[in-house]
Length: 453
Ligand code: FAD
Image 1 (cartoon, rainbow, N blue to C red):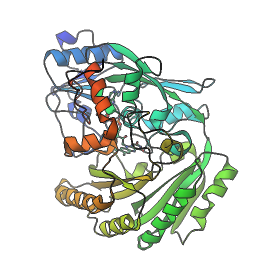
Image 2: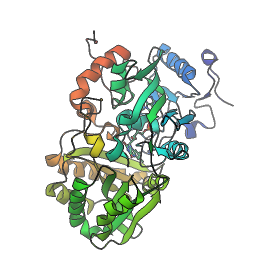
Image 3: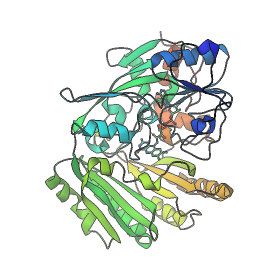
Image 4: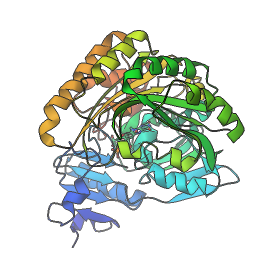
């Protein structure tokens, strides 16, 4: 039996409340730290359901959370006592292989999106863990293995259809509602519920050159310096990450890369990764693009307790290297990760005010401190280590942060730093499309008091 609500008679999807057997499964999100109890989870089938669920919540002044893939680390896609507009059942995707575009619904995960587009030998920049949702990732910016060549996910967004707080269905593109289009490319879920995204696609794979090399943790300082030099001179086709990770026999320092051009060029471009040092494991070579896209899946599984903090640093200085090496030596959980992700190539050549995502300087490196653990009793030690590690990086931090990496307890000032100099324009656009701040369970932009004229 599903919950029946007379006022939602025309709702076509499934309504789930505490009375339903699948309530616990339905309210679960990726991060096991998050344990919220919504009054209603509205599993939408399309824009009409979204409109109905929003109207229901607004009439009752209930908080509204919007869920795509449910991966938001802060648990912003669920809430206590409110309505979750759950889009996870909306998974239609149409690929136009001639036009090289895809129209995709917001319930898709990257593994599903990639499978559909790779069937045509096409891809766009997307998340590096397969079960991450396309929706939240796209709206925040979107780092991925193709960023150096094709820019971030938002740089490949052609248009989106969304439902506004007052129930209108709008298209956002360069030609229609261009202010809204600017805002949703990095402004997160502040402006409406996106019911479909249209992306540019590119010929990629099916086999590319990629994978990772793994070095003993004791070699971390020289591996990180090598990574810094390699990343600085790599061509756009190469996107390369470096990280402290759990290995099968204890912690390792890994360099993982993807080259999205020809296999010959890829072999040449990634050769330095194979010849540097004495790796304990070298898995760089030809790899299906979909394999590259699932490289990190096992490290970041669903249902584990997580606490993350992140920042941008201005280059991988010796100070950053020293601070992270020392911190990782004290990591309480063997599952935790510190990852360096560059703002590289095409992603770094877009002006910082061209979209709402402001962090475009090629010297920027995103540092993710990702604590993962299984026993809830270990929360204190892991949260403390994450915060301490973040503190030790503050002398090198730019003060900005990737909006999709914000944790729950970071506060309004940090949200402002995520949007940087674009915040005021976002606040003006928010005042036009969501003046009552219905969409506030996100990295929230407060509506400006004076709307755009
Ligand atoms: P959700 O939790 O469903 O939503 C996140 C936010 O977006 C919420 O505020 C929600 O309200 C809003 N939202 C979701 N759907 C919609 C919609 N349709 N309309 C309006 N608002 C909506 N980021 C990267 O850039 N690259 C990566 O490679 C990457 N890898 C990751 C791997 C893991 C394991 C995790 C946990 C995160 C990763 N991230 C990555 C961060 C990721 O971008 C965010 O977690 C993002 O929020 C995930 O999107 P989602 O749809 O799963 O999230």
